[in-house]
Image (tube, one colour):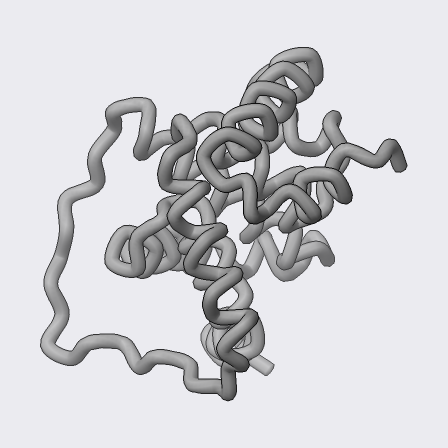
Length: 172
């Protein structure tokens, strides 16, 4: 399999997951699509090296987080419009889960970008404090502090998520 075919296969298999993570990080469908697109363009340039290293999932996930951090630190990537919009994944959603996702999305939108990134990495992606700190380029203490403040803020802005917050605070 050549590099381009391998990259296309990787993207086809992982696009939905990357899109979900990007949406949780940005809180906006359009920004999430842009984040995934910019990340995959950058990864495509180095795909041979990435795939040869043997851990393309970890590399792409880290690149996605770094790109997100760069975006909220003030760096802006110019948008390049395309002729055709990307296709959206379809699936069957139950109403209770849909309501829960909306409440979670709205609650995450009320957090500072750094706090949102920590919550997504720690509790959605299930990364350790050290891995989260590494992905965000900060100390483990900052991750602990940001997580603590973010969970406290979530308790105030979305008390209906109390069950999720309590589960997040149980030590591993």
